[in-house]
Structure formats: C-alpha cells, structure tokens
Length: 95
Image (cartoon, rainbow, N blue to C red; front, top):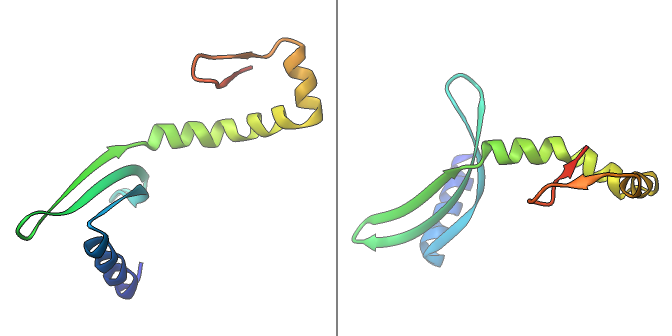
C-alpha cells in the first residue's frame, strides 16, 4: 500500500468511527496470514480498539474446496451428487 492509500484509509476510519473486514498480512518468513478484523475509533482520547482473528486455515480450506464446489455446480457435478456425494455438518462436500 502506498502512503497515500494508508492516509486515506486511516482518515476514512476515523470519520466513520469503525471498520471491519479481512486483510492479508505477510510474516517475516514470507508466509501469509489472513485476518478478520473489527476496529472502533476513539474508544478513549487518542485510543482505538481492534480485534483481529486468524482466519488463515478457513481461507485455505475455502481455496481448496472452491474447485470441488464449482465441479458440483456443473451439470456433471449434479449427477455425482445423486450418485452418493455427502455433505458434512458445515455444508462442505465430502468426496
């Protein structure tokens, strides 16, 4: 991110007073860390509050399941579902 983008994002956060979303961080070793965050501006004078949660495993799982889900939505995938595909409790495909 450029300095201008950071400054603009920070100004928007302070103006709205809150923000939430997902963000990718890079560790020193180059590996990625995906976080979900919720932030509140000015909880006290000059203080802001942020909660971050590591969602890396969930995002990797979503990336791995995406091709399976796409195949299941295809015409041939519908046929496979009728031939015995099961779903786990979270709605994921068990192949």
